View 1 (cartoon, one colour):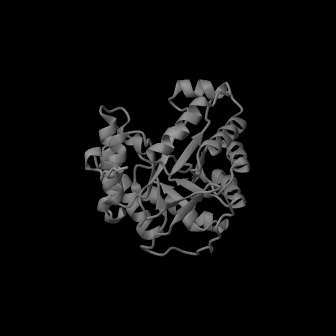
View 2 (cartoon, helix red, strand yellow):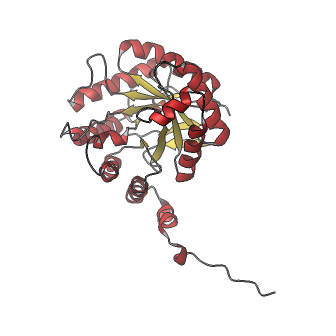
View 3 (cartoon, one colour):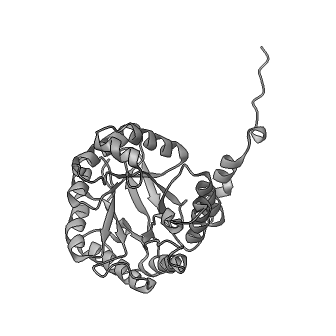
Length: 308
């Protein structure tokens, strides 16, 4: 499917939110402020998953296949695919994983790597409009990743750190976000194809981590008019009962304008939080998704039996 073309937008429209469209061959996921919250499934990532890393390194993609199917069935809209394993041919392993995921689900894919050659190889095999994860505000990274994104008509996640590292000042991180959007436009990438990651820090180590994310998300939406994403589970790192913390964090972030997150759709508490947030943000028409997800079997209408 050919990617839709968008006009390049110069400057920023305060308060205007634009839709980011990510596509597979047959399905589109739309990230936007007036759309249901977009869930990017995080499970196909060997970081911290020793069994998955070991299997992928040995060209065993059975767990990748199972994770792709399970996340699709659980309600993910996009699947993040990462092959960051030391001492492997990451570009080829990532390409194999992407091709397998495309064969078992019609969901669009986020191609996730810190290795530019791996991003390039992933984009070469992907059929559709991918989400590239990611580019930072570092000059070297901007100059190699953005031309790649433009060449393949992809969208890109912009992470709000640069050569100085990750600032604890949310306004400095916002300036990095603004720089990424401006440079993307300079490379001919429409601003709706840039999704900003405000960088979620562990709340157990940085007490202002949640407030900083909410502040950046609001400014990005109101002043840049672009969509946002985060790695939601980072907020609870090192703390007990992480699933509850993650769920509450997501609902608060959504109320501050967050439009997508890389998270685990297999966690019921997370999904319930997102579904409830869609209701209160006015993005679940007539609460139909909430009703469908929470109506018990005894509440469902039963078909009358025909008498033969």
